[in-house]
Image (cartoon, rainbow, N blue to C red; front, side, top):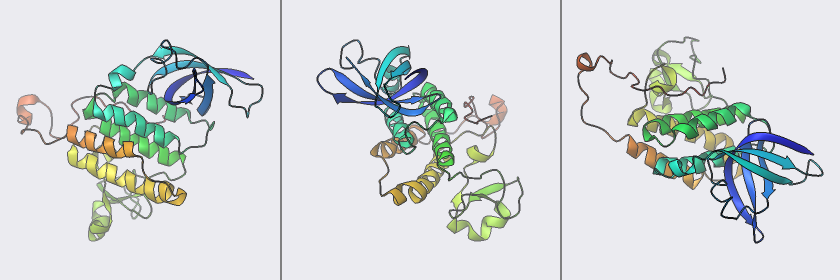
Length: 269
């Protein structure tokens, strides 16, 4: 059996004296493992770094076998990703999230999302927001999607301000205000197009996704959140530490709260 696909390196482990077992996220075949002969050589070590994009060819006698990988580099991002703490932790944390999914289960939109995030993860101003959206996408694929587009109580699409910890659905300000102390704040960057994440909204968003991952995934499986996620959260929030007051909007021509730069979309559209 044989196939060739585009893939992103998630991690490797040593196998014997000269080889490694590589774990990759493929575009069409999901998370996949394979033996890389000579993977510990000087030529292959730079290629087999987490975050790098490769073309991988898998061969095995039977589908259920581990099989062997042959790899050709497509984009070597790893050096750039090692420049910031948020990127280092982010790559590890996203790999841990993908390991929650069954091996060899296709998730092409998660592959696309991962590629987008890796291209921007070195910028700490974008990293936190993109990571939150990735966690939401993983929750969706695990069967625990959040509905942040419509009020669970009234059906309105306007003035959504809270998220119910029970249902994972948005609630409008009017309907949710009496129960505000029992619900999560809905970060504006998740509900309003063009809004950028600030430190408080990012902290709110990471607390919310962390809660739903723990409730629906980690706790039922008896596992703990990855240490890499904790490291990423600290690094991402530090990068968004409060800054000096911005110039008046009339001087810059930018309304308060508007996103100064384009954040890549991770939608499935």
